[in-house]
Image (tube, rainbow, N blue to C red):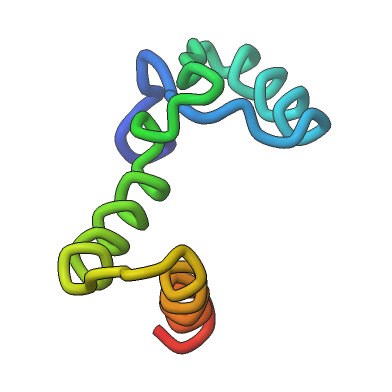
Length: 86
């Protein structure tokens, strides 16, 4: 903000309650409006949207699941790799 100026607004999810209050107070002080994604709308969150795209590209489009158990095992294996190894 000190380099490029104060933005008109910042869009975010609702976040943890205590953090959200502190951030809203600070933003109000510097004159920034807040916009929030709709609750239950993960497609409006870039991080979730990115993860969903990678899940589809790296797993779901490449695998054929014959049973629910197989799907659970492979998805959990991919999730573990995505969150720890990558």
